[in-house]
Length: 260
Length: 253
Image (tube, rainbow over all chains, first blue to last red; front, top):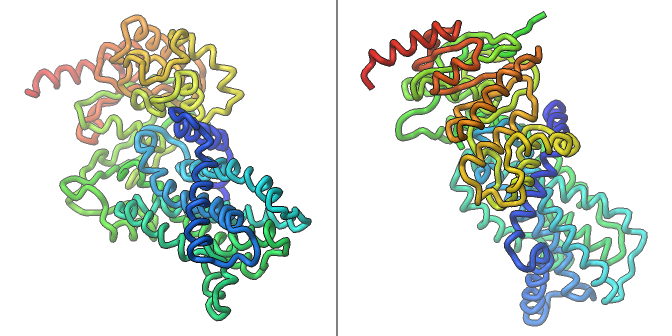
């Protein structure tokens, strides 16, 4: 594993190149360009605010609903697209894979990295939003890198898993978007775990996304230390998933050019 | 000291044939858990059958043979794009090359953007690419089109740019698979003389697959003829080509 990770490090420039290529190609012929990275989560936030706040009166413990859902949606968009875009990271680069050598893990990792750029751009809206709603930034921000790191590790594991699983079982390309739909409601994006009856809350934290999303909310909205037990569950999940999927990916990689 | 650039020892490569050319779910789980190649007796084609050969550093080896003989499979194995079912392959130093025109090129992006992309796929970092960029453009001879998206390129321009990038990466082992066919005569000459010069360097080797016996004769220091996954002959270019030509005349196509 260390050997493979070192090879990957040697190819870090290729990751950069793929990120650039992805982003350039994604936005080149559009008028709004990279602005779409901001518009998409904003629109989602608008829709969710109307449905869940105005009509369904979901409780946010005093936090303005747009802010409450925007923070979760940025994170959710990043994680769920790691699964959906990750699932085609290998199959959409068929030509390259069958004609040139390079460590194939570069592809899903570059996918995650370019999604992280989008995540970063949409996150630029968070400080002004906090300011508008008079929410202070406090020392709790020191926990932010930890939550971010867990989120990225989780996203990489998702992308490695989805990209290689699709090679083994092509039907997953159609199954994954469906699973993502379910995931949106199984994770506390439009609601907070705190709204649920206490006896069910623990089950929600078995979902690794919960720790991350609620972690962001604790730090930015409630100015409190994120629940470290739940964060540890997310971290352990992400680490174990990464180790397993990375090994699996490296096995699948050997046969890739022959079956893709 | 061992000065073999490439060595194959009893290498076998199998491909699935027939309708079910994809491995089944069961075959996948076996392969992933054990790390061994797919095995399906009788339904696999032997693209390469127990072949062994070595190529010394500093040589230009030409590989010839009919369609489907296994020539491109040899290149893919050297490049580590695919792995053998049995046998051992050893290579010295870096490997890069051009297995197909336009590999790694993104249609929407410009010529110069694509130079950076393709060169970094071949393992170079930005600084190194910037240093050789001028040479690449000059070699390709398409200075005026570097800011045009490559989807507007002619196939000749594609070939020129692709070849120029691949050779300027300066790998220890350079692989060229039948890509000179679309270039014009002047460019072809340029490439052939480049390949000849390339091997003056003691640690450079070229593996050249072609159907043009003329080109093979012009640059290669040795030639290997393979048919149906087996080596028929490996040796002096003139002798191997002569035998190959005689055989081609005798077999009705």
